[in-house]
Image (cartoon, rainbow over all chains, first blue to last red; front, top):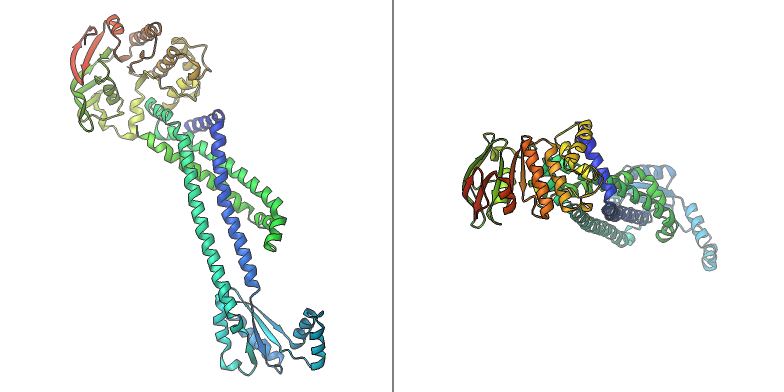
Length: 302
Length: 226
């Protein structure tokens, strides 16, 4: 049992060494394929980050009666937090709102003068609500329309933001669909090109396969070296892709942070390095084994 | 040992390669199958190796109908037959030593046996100084010697040679035929397909003559007459 396996591995190593041209070309094709497949994941990560950062900026402000007491605020906050889809609830008192407003417009003399003229704090205390996804705001707002909240809620700015929220919701779901469709298209195309290229490369050995069969080699004894060779190609291609992607992430990360307003590619890559490595080496190996099996199958019918 | 029984082979749409062929080959015989190109010699060999199945009729090997051998068992059957082709069919990516060793490796021979037997057989065929050469570095005659060594190494019961001298000059042709005769004298059955008149007339062994797929002559000591 071990002798045939040992021989199959030896044939594969010998073939890899003797067919250096084929080895380099195949590893290069696999490398390109894995780069494209991995880029799809990176773009998806980047798109998720951008969508998330846009969604972070959306919130709904519920303005409260100026006479509301802290117990009432806490009770409303608690009830909102219990709603499904609520990510964050923050209370901003009238005083905090005023300070924030003053800070924001500290260089605007007209506003500063107007505030002095009014003499009192014109701002309301409020509760800022952030939902996990934009499509959950409607349900949260519907809950707040309940009669029991009417005495303490002055107004809700949802209607004003509704159009924006809807737009963002539609944009993010479109981005997701586009990313999935483009990813699938490029992924499948690359896989097919790569499978075919390796298949053609192996088919050069069709005559050898026929001879092996005529000499009396069994199917697996004939196929074995091609499969082991495929494993070696896939492993090297995966390893090279991982290295190349890591270097790219290292050098491009500062630029990408600037471009995307904060997406740290190197950090994203490092956090998922084990998964990416397993994916790249695994798919490299799987791809070349599949191509070897398809290529050799035709010639094993002799 | 080998029996062709009422063999007919038709290639689509209606090309008759062999028509109702019946003959037997005994163990230890040296049988030449002669005929012009297209007479059906190669088809006959392909049927014996079960590269193809007959349209009708049976090929028996030690009374076993070879068309009944399951695909999984085919390698075992083929290991009993050494094959030598006109175009040598060597593994181009392997050295002379590796080509011959491969035939032993597929039958599961131990490494020590391979190391001992391959040099011996290469010596018999006169290639003791070409162990590490690749097929592309050899002459036609040398390639055919490697093919014979590969056929011989597994100690097959029968060696089938399909036009083994077709690509060789007269000097190497004689060389290869002498080698086959020597192997036959050691007890191995030889089936030689050829259209070389000189070889047949000099051999003075059994000759089966085919013409357009039909067996027209089967003589114990035959000559090349077409």
